[in-house]
Length: 162
Image (tube, rainbow, N blue to C red; front, side, top):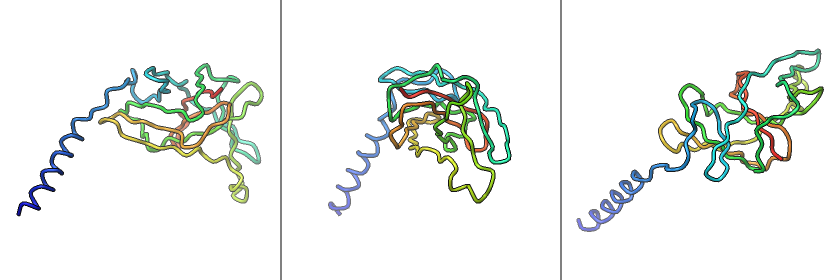
């Protein structure tokens, strides 16, 4: 009976210790907008709506302007998001090409060319507190323009890696 009691006591102590570990870092000022985490400072991403243009071969999603005013030197950026309506688990990260004074990503229309379609960068997602998430690029990003966008939405959150 003593052997059962000790492990249960240790389990109870570890659960109560884990419950006391609340996130105490910086928190986003606005909900549903990813913020870049720079040490203990948060930088709001450039929020907007992507426009869509179709050609015979591609569906092109673009954002006006050749570059985002939001910049990070981090090749593996970390974002904090306070969630109210945004489905953070649907966020995808894409590298954008700069063409004709705008940032864009082009997806082939033909099913035969889908293997050549741009692939989203892998992301990891961690819940820090109720309604607060940490989103992190799981790959090293090359210098350039990027955007986070919920799958199936034209809402974008842009930034630049330099």
